[in-house]
Image 1 (cartoon, one colour):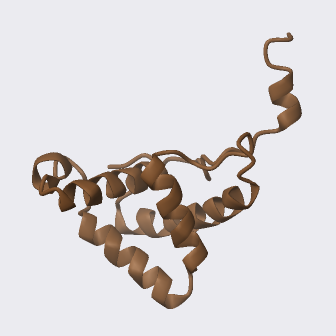
Image 2 (cartoon, rainbow, N blue to C red):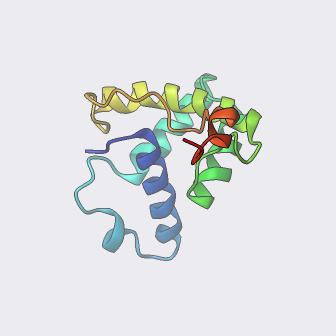
Length: 124
């Protein structure tokens, strides 16, 4: 079982890349509770239903291809808002499908850092 929405998304994009290189079975099937096709279908249905927008998908692709999450530190302000919205939508679906550990209480991992707190790191 996965522990976060981000873990599912990064795994999904890694497998999609490998699939095109004919390595999906070797590297992606292991002990995961869903298939790449499951995630593809969920994303497609959410997009077609209007729950996800094209902007959500653009942000998803942008950051999953880089295997990072948006961050206020890098001035990704608008991206953080879209990412957090995307994650909250997907979290509910992934928990319902049994792909995500429902006992995990996190909301989103996107960086909601307070810049003033970061300036004080090491000044204790």
